[in-house]
Image 1 (cartoon, helix red, strand yellow):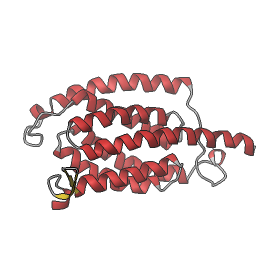
Image 2: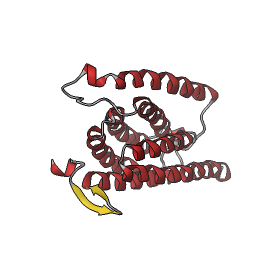
Image 3: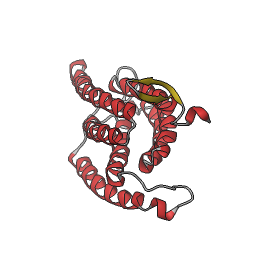
Length: 220
């Protein structure tokens, strides 16, 4: 399990010791989101690699909500892979994959309510994990409410990404900006850099999906 140890250094860059775990987690994360931004189904299997590595990393830096989030991501990467490849007939694009679409006002209201309530509930739970399960979580959760915001909104964004809703990218941009700050202060700077890159890719994904959505009208 040495390769999954954050203290097992792959190489150093500008004095920062980079572990195998953080390097390959960062690399697989960038590739997965790049494919997502291009609406390419390969984003899902590559994402499975990223979430597996991230699970081990977040446990070791006491970002427990983020650690639990990777279990959810593992399942949804499999679900998303199937959903994009198996749309209903009326949902197909020219590649026989799921079409891109916009949300409705009801979905936006659900996102807002879920984000606020979920962040508060999970933040409270995360701040007490070391008291509830001291044998497993020997240290208090770091930044439980910020971490919980990332976790809750990532679940929401992933659900709407599976459905190919354009607004998922706006949510991802908010998440990625927050995560860039959090991981930097937690001294996992390559993951901070990863999420800075993901912010850029999410912005690209937003514009690409809008362009592809508009192309349906032209094709029609």
